[in-house]
Amino acid sequence: MKWMPLAATAALLTMLTVPQAFADKLDDIIASGVLRCAVVLDFPPMGSRDANNNPVGFDVDTCTDLAAALGVTPEFVETPFPDRIPALVSGRADVGVASTSDTLERAKTIGFSIPYFAFTNVVLTRTDAGIADYEGLKGKKLGSVAGTFEAILLEDDMKTWGSTSTFQGYQSQADVFQALSQGQIDATVVTSTVAFATIASGNFNNLAIAGDAPYPIDYVSLIGLRTEYGLLNYLNLFVNQQIRSGRYQELYNKHVGEGDAPDLLIPGAYY
Amino acid sequence: MFNYTFHWRPALQALPQMLQGTLVTLQLAILSMIIGVAFGVVLALMRQSKNPLIHFPATVWVEVARNTPALLQIYMAYFGLGQLGIRLDSFVALLIGITFNNAGYLAETFRGGLRAIPQTQTRAARSLGFGAYQAFTLIVLPQLFRVVFHPMTNQMVWAILMTSLGVVVGLNTDLTGVVQDLNVRTFRTFEYFAIAAVLYYLIAKFVTLGARLLAWRLFRY
Image 1 (cartoon, chains in turn blue, green):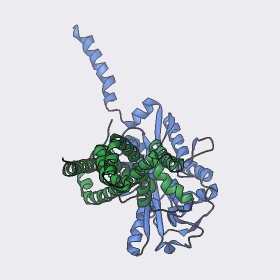
Image 2: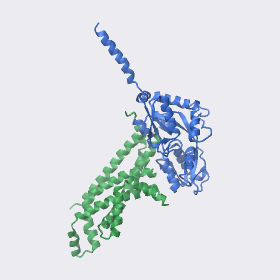
Image 3: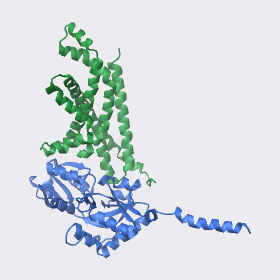
Image 4: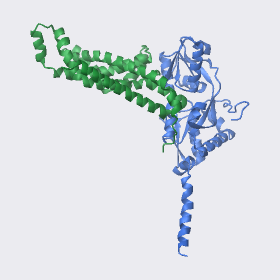
């Protein structure tokens, strides 16, 4: 029968091409040879730039490790905090390695991995502002990066205080420190790591930490598109491997300082 | 590929908050326009002066306002003045930034407008016994506003749109500030920004229409 070879060729071609139609984000990344990570670079020690303007930090190294695991080249897409999701959704970045707090509100829009880091928050104030602890924030001019985990909790607390405190929401961490240093605001609540790194940088000599903020632990996750289960599963396993291989602790020592890296297990609960 | 499903229902629930922000935006634009017009007229007159002490500061203002980004002007009003110990709140810093920009552009518009009014008008007024001030305010100025009305309307729309730069200095009560806050909390960027774009369009249309009605009422022969 003459049509047999033709049919066989057609069937073979179909077999080769059909799986292509189901290629997901993970396949696309591997095929392209490049992993584009959305990173925030004004948030040391998680992300910043070195003296030669190269991206450095815990998030930058985590992205590099992820790219190495995938066998591709990392590419850093710098995004301010508010632009992390548009960068993913518009296809400018494949994953976000950007210290993203895993709130339920945000999970309606994007997919989170298991936590890859955890923050505690502290009060950062100016030395002349007369603030000794979190209680001292009442009646003061406060500010933070708008919409972040700590900003939401601070604004909630301010509502219960009913005092004359004011809140100023900025678009970047750098602007918050600038405003705090100049006196437009008296204090901010910020992750302890960024507070210590900022003071250690020597750029703001009039800032000091004034105790812990009584907030729950701020678990942050890697992010991808909500529908990309293949990629999200891979991210989960990647985070797990980072911890059990000791790389998580190693990166903590390198970027944050010697000490125990934060425990990423949520006590008494499955993730 | 645009991989996103729109959630309009929760986004529309935030509409009252956004309308509240719209009022702040309008308030800012109107204030910056009123103050900007006053400064613009003065700057235009200063630039016509032969005295360099009067002429020079006005030229510097106009040159800086027109040839540097509005974003920079607003940033300088907040963080630049802050560095000098002058701490303005976000609303005032934004108002100063936009007004500075408005006045610079309007000064040039007014200068062109003044040239379009023949000198003979002033001379005729003076010969009828008007003082210099009277001749300017009663004869030249009303004609000036007639000549520059449409460019002024343009500037008003520009002022409205410029208010969106307030987020860079921490303003979170105007339309863009409210939208940006909602955006970071929920990550529903596209819905909120789409609604904001429609609201900005409506405000601009509303202002243009208002200006047309005003022109029809004021400038009919």
